[in-house]
Image (cartoon, rainbow, N blue to C red):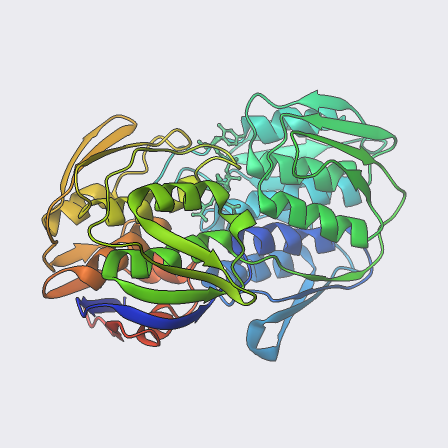
Length: 423
Ligand code: EPZ
Protein backbone atom coordinates (compact mmCIF):
# COMPACT_ATOMS: atom_id res chain seq x y z
CA UNK A 1 0.00 0.00 0.00
CA UNK A 2 1.45 3.37 -1.04
CA UNK A 3 2.00 6.28 1.27
CA UNK A 4 2.02 9.99 0.50
CA UNK A 5 4.53 12.28 2.21
CA UNK A 6 3.68 15.99 2.45
CA UNK A 7 5.82 18.78 3.87
CA UNK A 8 4.52 22.25 4.67
CA UNK A 9 6.12 24.41 2.01
CA UNK A 10 4.53 27.86 2.01
CA UNK A 11 2.22 29.52 -0.50
CA UNK A 12 1.12 27.77 -3.70
CA UNK A 13 0.76 29.25 -7.16
CA UNK A 14 -0.23 28.05 -10.61
CA UNK A 15 -3.04 26.07 -12.21
CA UNK A 16 -4.73 22.76 -11.39
CA UNK A 17 -6.82 21.03 -14.10
CA UNK A 18 -10.07 19.61 -12.74
CA UNK A 19 -11.15 16.24 -14.15
CA UNK A 20 -14.57 14.87 -15.08
CA UNK A 21 -16.81 13.97 -12.14
CA UNK A 22 -16.33 10.51 -10.61
CA UNK A 23 -19.89 10.55 -9.28
CA UNK A 24 -21.33 11.54 -12.64
CA UNK A 25 -19.30 8.95 -14.56
CA UNK A 26 -20.33 6.17 -12.16
CA UNK A 27 -23.97 6.89 -13.04
CA UNK A 28 -23.37 7.48 -16.77
CA UNK A 29 -21.52 4.21 -17.38
CA UNK A 30 -24.46 1.94 -16.33
CA UNK A 31 -26.65 3.88 -18.81
CA UNK A 32 -24.99 1.83 -21.55
CA UNK A 33 -27.11 -1.12 -20.35
CA UNK A 34 -30.20 0.75 -21.56
CA UNK A 35 -29.33 0.61 -25.25
CA UNK A 36 -27.96 -1.81 -27.85
CA UNK A 37 -26.03 1.07 -29.41
CA UNK A 38 -22.68 2.45 -28.21
CA UNK A 39 -22.47 5.18 -25.58
CA UNK A 40 -19.22 7.19 -25.60
CA UNK A 41 -18.24 9.24 -22.58
CA UNK A 42 -15.60 11.95 -23.01
CA UNK A 43 -13.76 13.87 -20.24
CA UNK A 44 -13.88 10.69 -18.15
CA UNK A 45 -11.76 10.70 -14.96
CA UNK A 46 -8.98 8.10 -14.59
CA UNK A 47 -9.75 6.57 -11.22
CA UNK A 48 -9.85 3.16 -9.60
CA UNK A 49 -13.61 3.46 -9.07
CA UNK A 50 -14.05 3.83 -12.84
CA UNK A 51 -12.00 0.67 -13.33
CA UNK A 52 -14.22 -1.11 -10.79
CA UNK A 53 -17.36 -0.03 -12.67
CA UNK A 54 -15.71 -1.23 -15.89
CA UNK A 55 -15.16 -4.63 -14.29
CA UNK A 56 -18.77 -4.79 -13.10
CA UNK A 57 -20.22 -3.84 -16.51
CA UNK A 58 -17.98 -6.41 -18.20
CA UNK A 59 -19.30 -9.08 -15.81
CA UNK A 60 -22.81 -8.18 -16.99
CA UNK A 61 -21.84 -8.51 -20.65
CA UNK A 62 -21.27 -4.85 -21.50
CA UNK A 63 -18.01 -3.68 -23.03
CA UNK A 64 -16.09 -0.64 -21.82
CA UNK A 65 -12.98 0.37 -23.77
CA UNK A 66 -10.77 3.08 -22.33
CA UNK A 67 -9.43 5.32 -25.11
CA UNK A 68 -7.00 8.27 -24.99
CA UNK A 69 -5.40 7.02 -21.74
CA UNK A 70 -8.81 6.56 -20.14
CA UNK A 71 -10.21 10.02 -20.83
CA UNK A 72 -12.72 8.53 -23.27
CA UNK A 73 -14.83 5.47 -22.44
CA UNK A 74 -16.40 3.68 -25.38
CA UNK A 75 -19.17 1.53 -23.92
CA UNK A 76 -21.66 -0.82 -25.52
CA UNK A 77 -24.07 -3.56 -24.49
CA UNK A 78 -25.46 -5.38 -27.51
CA UNK A 79 -24.93 -9.05 -26.71
CA UNK A 80 -26.22 -11.44 -24.10
CA UNK A 81 -26.69 -9.67 -20.75
CA UNK A 82 -25.95 -11.37 -17.43
CA UNK A 83 -28.45 -9.95 -14.89
CA UNK A 84 -26.38 -10.79 -11.81
CA UNK A 85 -24.17 -8.13 -10.17
CA UNK A 86 -21.87 -10.18 -7.98
CA UNK A 87 -21.08 -9.39 -4.32
CA UNK A 88 -17.33 -9.66 -4.94
CA UNK A 89 -17.44 -6.53 -7.11
CA UNK A 90 -20.41 -4.72 -5.57
CA UNK A 91 -18.92 -4.84 -2.04
CA UNK A 92 -15.94 -2.82 -3.30
CA UNK A 93 -18.04 0.08 -4.50
CA UNK A 94 -21.55 1.11 -3.47
CA UNK A 95 -22.17 2.84 -6.80
CA UNK A 96 -22.45 -0.68 -8.27
CA UNK A 97 -26.08 -0.45 -7.19
CA UNK A 98 -26.64 1.88 -10.15
CA UNK A 99 -26.94 -1.12 -12.49
CA UNK A 100 -30.21 -2.14 -10.81
CA UNK A 101 -32.47 0.36 -12.60
CA UNK A 102 -30.96 -0.13 -16.07
CA UNK A 103 -31.01 -3.97 -15.81
CA UNK A 104 -34.66 -3.89 -14.75
CA UNK A 105 -35.54 -1.53 -17.60
CA UNK A 106 -33.65 -3.48 -20.27
CA UNK A 107 -34.27 -7.08 -19.15
CA UNK A 108 -37.22 -6.92 -16.79
CA UNK A 109 -35.20 -8.63 -14.07
CA UNK A 110 -31.97 -8.19 -12.08
CA UNK A 111 -30.09 -9.76 -9.19
CA UNK A 112 -27.88 -7.18 -7.50
CA UNK A 113 -25.90 -7.77 -4.34
CA UNK A 114 -26.54 -5.37 -1.50
CA UNK A 115 -23.36 -3.27 -1.29
CA UNK A 116 -22.97 -3.74 2.43
CA UNK A 117 -21.99 -0.87 4.68
CA UNK A 118 -18.89 1.22 4.30
CA UNK A 119 -16.74 3.35 6.58
CA UNK A 120 -19.07 6.34 6.47
CA UNK A 121 -22.35 4.58 7.06
CA UNK A 122 -24.77 1.68 6.71
CA UNK A 123 -25.81 2.88 3.26
CA UNK A 124 -29.18 1.03 3.03
CA UNK A 125 -31.11 0.66 -0.24
CA UNK A 126 -34.70 1.20 0.92
CA UNK A 127 -35.19 4.43 -1.06
CA UNK A 128 -34.00 2.70 -4.27
CA UNK A 129 -36.35 -0.23 -3.58
CA UNK A 130 -39.35 2.03 -2.93
CA UNK A 131 -38.66 4.07 -6.07
CA UNK A 132 -38.28 1.07 -8.39
CA UNK A 133 -41.24 -0.70 -6.78
CA UNK A 134 -43.33 2.36 -7.64
CA UNK A 135 -42.52 1.60 -11.30
CA UNK A 136 -43.93 -1.90 -10.87
CA UNK A 137 -40.80 -3.83 -9.90
CA UNK A 138 -41.12 -6.64 -7.35
CA UNK A 139 -37.96 -6.65 -5.25
CA UNK A 140 -37.05 -9.03 -2.45
CA UNK A 141 -33.88 -9.56 -0.46
CA UNK A 142 -32.51 -13.13 -0.48
CA UNK A 143 -29.07 -14.10 0.88
CA UNK A 144 -27.68 -10.60 0.54
CA UNK A 145 -28.96 -10.08 -2.98
CA UNK A 146 -31.83 -7.95 -4.23
CA UNK A 147 -33.91 -10.12 -6.59
CA UNK A 148 -35.90 -7.73 -8.77
CA UNK A 149 -38.35 -8.44 -11.54
CA UNK A 150 -40.90 -6.54 -13.55
CA UNK A 151 -43.02 -9.05 -15.41
CA UNK A 152 -44.57 -7.22 -18.35
CA UNK A 153 -42.07 -4.37 -18.03
CA UNK A 154 -41.95 -1.23 -15.88
CA UNK A 155 -44.87 1.17 -15.84
CA UNK A 156 -44.69 4.95 -15.37
CA UNK A 157 -45.76 6.24 -11.94
CA UNK A 158 -45.75 9.27 -9.67
CA UNK A 159 -43.41 8.71 -6.71
CA UNK A 160 -42.17 10.88 -3.86
CA UNK A 161 -38.90 9.82 -2.17
CA UNK A 162 -38.67 10.15 1.62
CA UNK A 163 -35.20 11.64 1.15
CA UNK A 164 -33.55 13.17 -1.92
CA UNK A 165 -31.22 10.20 -2.46
CA UNK A 166 -28.73 10.78 -5.30
CA UNK A 167 -28.40 7.11 -6.25
CA UNK A 168 -32.09 6.36 -5.98
CA UNK A 169 -32.84 9.36 -8.23
CA UNK A 170 -30.36 8.01 -10.78
CA UNK A 171 -31.78 4.49 -10.68
CA UNK A 172 -35.30 5.86 -11.07
CA UNK A 173 -34.35 8.12 -14.01
CA UNK A 174 -32.71 5.26 -15.91
CA UNK A 175 -35.54 2.81 -15.19
CA UNK A 176 -38.35 5.27 -15.98
CA UNK A 177 -36.73 6.20 -19.32
CA UNK A 178 -37.88 2.83 -20.73
CA UNK A 179 -41.05 2.38 -18.65
CA UNK A 180 -44.46 2.42 -20.32
CA UNK A 181 -46.07 5.82 -19.72
CA UNK A 182 -45.19 8.91 -17.76
CA UNK A 183 -43.33 9.07 -14.43
CA UNK A 184 -42.95 11.95 -12.02
CA UNK A 185 -40.27 11.78 -9.33
CA UNK A 186 -40.83 14.12 -6.39
CA UNK A 187 -38.22 15.16 -3.83
CA UNK A 188 -35.65 14.19 -6.47
CA UNK A 189 -31.97 14.89 -5.82
CA UNK A 190 -30.78 18.09 -7.56
CA UNK A 191 -27.03 17.43 -7.77
CA UNK A 192 -25.17 18.45 -10.97
CA UNK A 193 -24.49 14.75 -11.50
CA UNK A 194 -28.25 14.18 -11.81
CA UNK A 195 -28.45 16.96 -14.41
CA UNK A 196 -25.55 15.38 -16.27
CA UNK A 197 -27.20 11.95 -16.32
CA UNK A 198 -30.50 13.45 -17.55
CA UNK A 199 -28.68 15.28 -20.35
CA UNK A 200 -26.95 12.06 -21.38
CA UNK A 201 -30.22 10.07 -21.33
CA UNK A 202 -31.86 12.81 -23.41
CA UNK A 203 -29.02 12.55 -25.93
CA UNK A 204 -29.88 8.83 -26.06
CA UNK A 205 -33.51 9.67 -26.89
CA UNK A 206 -35.07 9.76 -23.42
CA UNK A 207 -37.79 12.32 -22.74
CA UNK A 208 -36.92 13.97 -19.42
CA UNK A 209 -37.55 17.42 -17.99
CA UNK A 210 -37.09 19.15 -14.65
CA UNK A 211 -33.67 17.72 -13.78
CA UNK A 212 -31.91 19.95 -11.28
CA UNK A 213 -35.23 20.67 -9.56
CA UNK A 214 -37.03 18.54 -6.98
CA UNK A 215 -39.58 17.30 -9.54
CA UNK A 216 -38.46 15.38 -12.62
CA UNK A 217 -40.91 14.17 -15.30
CA UNK A 218 -39.97 11.26 -17.58
CA UNK A 219 -42.02 10.14 -20.58
CA UNK A 220 -41.04 6.50 -21.19
CA UNK A 221 -39.90 5.54 -24.73
CA UNK A 222 -39.62 2.12 -26.39
CA UNK A 223 -35.89 2.20 -26.93
CA UNK A 224 -32.82 4.39 -26.50
CA UNK A 225 -30.09 4.90 -29.10
CA UNK A 226 -26.36 5.55 -28.73
CA UNK A 227 -24.81 8.93 -27.94
CA UNK A 228 -21.59 10.74 -27.11
CA UNK A 229 -21.64 12.70 -23.87
CA UNK A 230 -19.03 14.78 -21.99
CA UNK A 231 -18.78 14.04 -18.27
CA UNK A 232 -19.45 17.17 -16.20
CA UNK A 233 -16.57 18.74 -14.22
CA UNK A 234 -16.01 17.18 -10.80
CA UNK A 235 -17.29 19.72 -8.27
CA UNK A 236 -15.84 17.76 -5.35
CA UNK A 237 -12.34 17.62 -6.83
CA UNK A 238 -12.81 21.32 -7.65
CA UNK A 239 -13.74 22.22 -4.08
CA UNK A 240 -10.91 20.10 -2.74
CA UNK A 241 -8.23 21.91 -4.77
CA UNK A 242 -9.78 25.31 -4.08
CA UNK A 243 -8.90 24.65 -0.45
CA UNK A 244 -5.20 24.19 -1.17
CA UNK A 245 -4.39 27.93 -1.57
CA UNK A 246 -6.95 28.68 1.14
CA UNK A 247 -4.93 26.54 3.57
CA UNK A 248 -1.40 27.38 2.33
CA UNK A 249 -1.72 30.90 0.99
CA UNK A 250 -0.82 31.97 -2.55
CA UNK A 251 -3.14 31.85 -5.54
CA UNK A 252 -4.28 28.84 -7.60
CA UNK A 253 -6.54 28.72 -10.68
CA UNK A 254 -8.68 25.56 -10.87
CA UNK A 255 -9.17 24.99 -14.60
CA UNK A 256 -12.69 24.02 -15.66
CA UNK A 257 -14.23 25.22 -12.39
CA UNK A 258 -17.51 27.11 -12.36
CA UNK A 259 -19.08 28.93 -9.40
CA UNK A 260 -22.46 27.32 -10.22
CA UNK A 261 -21.03 23.90 -9.31
CA UNK A 262 -19.92 24.98 -5.82
CA UNK A 263 -22.11 27.96 -4.94
CA UNK A 264 -22.85 27.15 -1.27
CA UNK A 265 -19.22 26.07 -0.76
CA UNK A 266 -18.03 29.43 -2.15
CA UNK A 267 -20.32 31.27 0.24
CA UNK A 268 -18.58 29.53 3.15
CA UNK A 269 -15.15 30.25 1.69
CA UNK A 270 -16.09 33.93 1.40
CA UNK A 271 -17.21 34.02 5.04
CA UNK A 272 -13.92 32.35 6.05
CA UNK A 273 -11.90 35.06 4.27
CA UNK A 274 -11.16 33.47 0.91
CA UNK A 275 -11.81 35.12 -2.43
CA UNK A 276 -12.99 33.20 -5.49
CA UNK A 277 -12.90 34.83 -8.92
CA UNK A 278 -14.47 33.18 -11.99
CA UNK A 279 -12.16 33.57 -15.02
CA UNK A 280 -12.73 32.35 -18.57
CA UNK A 281 -10.61 29.28 -17.73
CA UNK A 282 -11.84 28.42 -14.25
CA UNK A 283 -11.84 29.65 -10.65
CA UNK A 284 -9.00 31.69 -9.16
CA UNK A 285 -8.72 31.25 -5.38
CA UNK A 286 -6.67 33.11 -2.79
CA UNK A 287 -6.90 34.37 0.77
CA UNK A 288 -8.35 37.86 1.11
CA UNK A 289 -5.92 38.91 3.83
CA UNK A 290 -4.69 37.60 7.14
CA UNK A 291 -5.90 34.57 9.00
CA UNK A 292 -8.82 32.35 8.03
CA UNK A 293 -11.95 33.03 10.07
CA UNK A 294 -14.02 30.30 11.76
CA UNK A 295 -17.36 29.46 10.08
CA UNK A 296 -20.16 27.00 10.85
CA UNK A 297 -21.07 24.36 8.24
CA UNK A 298 -24.13 22.12 7.82
CA UNK A 299 -24.05 19.46 5.11
CA UNK A 300 -27.21 19.13 3.02
CA UNK A 301 -28.36 17.76 -0.34
CA UNK A 302 -27.52 20.03 -3.29
CA UNK A 303 -27.65 23.02 -3.47
CA UNK A 304 -26.64 22.93 0.20
CA UNK A 305 -23.06 22.45 1.42
CA UNK A 306 -21.83 19.09 0.00
CA UNK A 307 -21.11 16.31 2.49
CA UNK A 308 -18.24 15.27 0.18
CA UNK A 309 -16.43 18.54 1.03
CA UNK A 310 -17.01 18.42 4.80
CA UNK A 311 -13.75 16.67 5.67
CA UNK A 312 -11.72 19.01 3.45
CA UNK A 313 -13.41 22.10 4.97
CA UNK A 314 -12.59 20.79 8.45
CA UNK A 315 -8.91 20.70 7.48
CA UNK A 316 -9.12 24.41 6.65
CA UNK A 317 -10.98 25.29 9.85
CA UNK A 318 -8.39 23.56 12.08
CA UNK A 319 -6.20 26.69 11.83
CA UNK A 320 -8.99 29.29 11.56
CA UNK A 321 -9.31 32.10 14.11
CA UNK A 322 -12.12 31.08 16.44
CA UNK A 323 -14.39 28.07 16.83
CA UNK A 324 -16.31 26.39 14.00
CA UNK A 325 -19.12 23.85 14.29
CA UNK A 326 -19.61 21.34 11.47
CA UNK A 327 -22.87 19.39 11.38
CA UNK A 328 -22.90 16.25 9.18
CA UNK A 329 -26.53 15.57 8.28
CA UNK A 330 -26.10 13.15 5.36
CA UNK A 331 -24.01 10.27 6.75
CA UNK A 332 -23.94 8.83 10.24
CA UNK A 333 -20.20 8.35 10.56
CA UNK A 334 -18.28 10.88 8.53
CA UNK A 335 -15.87 12.41 11.06
CA UNK A 336 -13.14 9.73 10.95
CA UNK A 337 -10.68 12.35 9.74
CA UNK A 338 -11.09 14.22 13.06
CA UNK A 339 -8.88 11.96 15.23
CA UNK A 340 -6.26 11.89 12.46
CA UNK A 341 -6.27 15.70 12.27
CA UNK A 342 -6.00 15.71 16.08
CA UNK A 343 -2.75 13.76 15.73
CA UNK A 344 -1.49 16.84 13.88
CA UNK A 345 -2.48 19.11 16.77
CA UNK A 346 -6.01 20.02 15.73
CA UNK A 347 -8.47 20.61 18.58
CA UNK A 348 -11.72 18.90 17.59
CA UNK A 349 -14.59 17.59 19.73
CA UNK A 350 -16.99 15.18 18.03
CA UNK A 351 -20.42 14.54 19.51
CA UNK A 352 -22.74 12.51 17.26
CA UNK A 353 -23.32 14.50 14.08
CA UNK A 354 -21.51 17.60 15.30
CA UNK A 355 -17.78 18.41 15.26
CA UNK A 356 -16.56 21.51 17.10
CA UNK A 357 -13.21 22.77 15.82
CA UNK A 358 -11.20 25.20 17.97
CA UNK A 359 -8.71 26.88 15.65
CA UNK A 360 -4.99 26.59 16.47
CA UNK A 361 -2.11 28.65 15.06
CA UNK A 362 -0.55 25.87 13.00
CA UNK A 363 -0.73 22.09 12.68
CA UNK A 364 2.32 19.86 13.03
CA UNK A 365 3.15 17.07 10.61
CA UNK A 366 2.56 13.49 11.85
CA UNK A 367 2.01 9.97 10.53
CA UNK A 368 -1.76 9.66 9.85
CA UNK A 369 -4.06 7.07 8.28
CA UNK A 370 -6.64 7.51 5.55
CA UNK A 371 -9.98 5.92 6.40
CA UNK A 372 -12.20 6.87 3.47
CA UNK A 373 -11.93 8.78 0.24
CA UNK A 374 -12.61 12.32 1.37
CA UNK A 375 -10.96 11.91 4.77
CA UNK A 376 -7.76 10.94 2.92
CA UNK A 377 -7.54 14.14 0.97
CA UNK A 378 -8.37 16.28 4.01
CA UNK A 379 -5.21 14.89 5.66
CA UNK A 380 -3.16 15.83 2.61
CA UNK A 381 -4.62 19.35 2.64
CA UNK A 382 -3.77 19.67 6.35
CA UNK A 383 -0.23 18.43 5.66
CA UNK A 384 0.31 21.09 2.97
CA UNK A 385 0.45 23.84 5.61
CA UNK A 386 1.58 21.85 8.66
CA UNK A 387 5.02 22.35 10.18
CA UNK A 388 7.22 19.42 9.23
CA UNK A 389 6.35 16.15 7.54
CA UNK A 390 2.99 14.36 7.31
CA UNK A 391 2.89 10.74 6.14
CA UNK A 392 -0.54 9.58 4.96
CA UNK A 393 -0.91 5.80 4.77
CA UNK A 394 -3.60 3.66 3.04
CA UNK A 395 -3.80 6.10 0.12
CA UNK A 396 -5.65 3.51 -1.98
CA UNK A 397 -8.72 5.28 -0.59
CA UNK A 398 -7.47 8.44 -2.27
CA UNK A 399 -6.93 6.85 -5.67
CA UNK A 400 -10.64 5.99 -5.84
CA UNK A 401 -11.55 9.64 -6.37
CA UNK A 402 -8.47 11.73 -7.11
CA UNK A 403 -6.43 11.44 -10.30
CA UNK A 404 -2.66 11.94 -9.73
CA UNK A 405 -3.13 14.07 -6.62
CA UNK A 406 0.58 14.42 -5.92
CA UNK A 407 1.32 15.55 -9.51
CA UNK A 408 -1.45 18.16 -9.47
CA UNK A 409 -0.32 19.61 -6.13
CA UNK A 410 3.41 19.44 -6.95
CA UNK A 411 2.69 21.48 -10.08
CA UNK A 412 1.60 24.42 -7.91
CA UNK A 413 4.56 24.20 -5.55
CA UNK A 414 3.57 21.64 -2.92
CA UNK A 415 6.28 19.40 -1.47
CA UNK A 416 4.51 16.05 -1.89
CA UNK A 417 5.59 12.60 -3.05
CA UNK A 418 4.18 9.09 -3.20
CA UNK A 419 6.29 6.24 -1.86
CA UNK A 420 5.75 2.52 -2.09
CA UNK A 421 4.95 1.13 1.34
CA UNK A 422 6.85 -2.16 1.68
CA UNK A 423 4.78 -3.17 4.74
C1 EPZ B 1 -23.79 9.69 -3.68
O1 EPZ B 1 -23.91 8.53 -2.87
C2 EPZ B 1 -22.30 9.91 -3.87
N1 EPZ B 1 -21.72 8.74 -4.53
C3 EPZ B 1 -21.62 10.12 -2.52
O2 EPZ B 1 -20.24 10.40 -2.76
C4 EPZ B 1 -22.26 11.33 -1.85
O3 EPZ B 1 -21.68 11.52 -0.58
C5 EPZ B 1 -23.77 11.11 -1.72
O4 EPZ B 1 -24.33 10.85 -3.03
C6 EPZ B 1 -24.48 12.32 -1.13
O5 EPZ B 1 -24.25 13.44 -1.93
C7 EPZ B 1 -21.92 8.59 -5.86
O6 EPZ B 1 -22.56 9.39 -6.52
C8 EPZ B 1 -21.28 7.38 -6.49
P1 EPZ B 1 -27.50 9.05 -1.20
P2 EPZ B 1 -25.38 7.86 -2.64
O7 EPZ B 1 -28.31 7.93 -1.72
O8 EPZ B 1 -26.15 7.94 -3.90
C9 EPZ B 1 -29.13 7.34 2.93
C10 EPZ B 1 -17.92 10.21 -2.50
O9 EPZ B 1 -17.17 10.50 -1.56
N2 EPZ B 1 -29.87 6.39 2.08
O10 EPZ B 1 -27.87 10.46 -1.54
O11 EPZ B 1 -25.17 6.54 -2.04
C11 EPZ B 1 -27.63 7.06 2.89
O12 EPZ B 1 -27.31 6.04 3.82
C12 EPZ B 1 -19.24 9.52 -2.23
O13 EPZ B 1 -17.69 10.47 -3.70
C13 EPZ B 1 -30.83 5.56 2.66
O14 EPZ B 1 -31.07 5.59 3.87
O15 EPZ B 1 -25.98 8.86 -1.58
C14 EPZ B 1 -27.04 8.39 3.26
O16 EPZ B 1 -27.06 8.54 4.66
C15 EPZ B 1 -19.43 9.18 -0.77
N3 EPZ B 1 -31.48 4.67 1.87
C16 EPZ B 1 -28.01 9.39 2.62
O17 EPZ B 1 -29.23 8.67 2.39
C17 EPZ B 1 -31.25 4.58 0.52
O18 EPZ B 1 -31.91 3.77 -0.16
C18 EPZ B 1 -27.52 9.94 1.28
O19 EPZ B 1 -27.40 8.86 0.41
C19 EPZ B 1 -30.28 5.43 -0.05
C20 EPZ B 1 -29.60 6.33 0.74
